[in-house]
Image 1 (cartoon, helix red, strand yellow):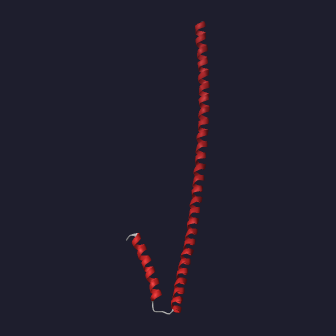
Image 2 (cartoon, one colour; image 1 turned 30 degrees about the vertical axis):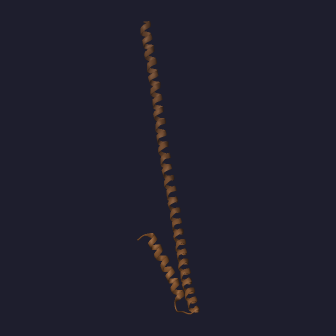
Image 3 (cartoon, one colour; image 1 turned 135 degrees about the vertical axis):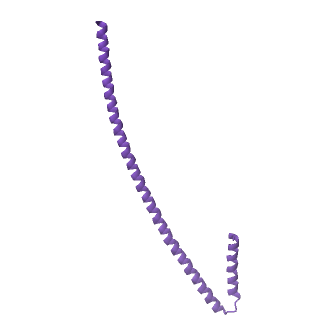
Length: 124
């Protein structure tokens, strides 16, 4: 069924009920009492829905706050893990750089020794 049809049906039923109350063979006092009762029932129903909406919105808020907190904890854990991995890689790179500098110094020393050997062979 379409939304317009349902709204039309609801509107028609409301108008029909109101007209039935107004044209029913009841005394004015009976009609007023019945209208007052119906309005009290409607008010109670609306208040029930307001209370339910308040409860549900509170539950949704609590769930959203919990999700936010869980997400923040997860992000912090991820950041800490990345920091740890970064520090470990940084230390590994420092160690490798130190080794490369040592190798460079060893190669330089070997080359200087070979140059000296060649100079001695040429001078001799």
